[in-house]
Image 1 (tube, rainbow, N blue to C red):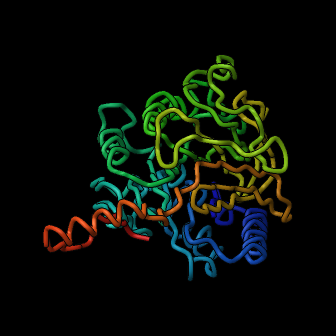
Image 2 (cartoon, rainbow, N blue to C red; image 1 turned 180 degrees about the vertical axis):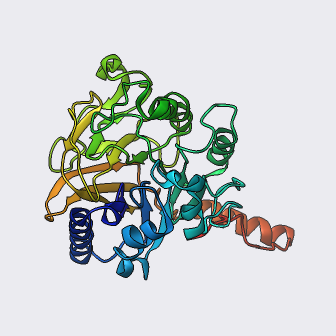
Length: 357
């Protein structure tokens, strides 16, 4: 389950109504489709307006007590979380795997980290308070982490979107002191070079979702579908059809989907016309992702329970296990062993070192 900019309940009564409705419609959707999520991602601005300890109580812990009892929450900080003492209440509220305790490379920082669940590798970045240059600790760690993973899927998430035309504008170099530009120009190329599949952000208070793209690091007017789109369709199995990626696991530059999920407790509109986006919705809601082997499917569930968007990414299925032994080869081997009198010791072969989950 994915929510972004969800902390408005600590700031306004309407925020409580909207956040509660988004929560309830997610729970209704989950109940009707097989049960609660195994992973919960929170995309920053988790407690308005300044991320104080009291605002975390009112904007997070009192809004989602039932979900918190049975779903592990993996957050990233946003600009409002950093508004109090360098995000001290945020870091006090969560214990995050700085030493690789949940899979992935050790980052040495709770501001950015990674974890594994089943065949998915999740990467959490800090787009507000950490160094966003290619020589900084976060970039250096990210490259090591990407090199180390052997997961079938990679999902990266942080707060400031590389592509948006909502309440923020990723074409504006000065928006959010350049953080949107920094993440698009520095971190997106690295992630794509290792084969990221899905990237999630908040900050812009709407829902936006791209087509399957790769290699677009400039402003929206420089987007060329013939160069930057791997698939210009909507990715909906009931529409233009699912997006396809040719490699099971990670391979560079096969395309990724970018989504802004920043309306989980409020919406603020904008032109909502970024060139990479296939869907843009100015309404409160959340995203639900389902990964089943070589298929990833996601939906946007709004606060009325309406499915406003659906897309699917398909990779080649796992190869079928070898089930037929070449009979002639087996007979020949048995005859060789009989003639020579050799003893054959059969031990366990090499196996997969599976990470957590």
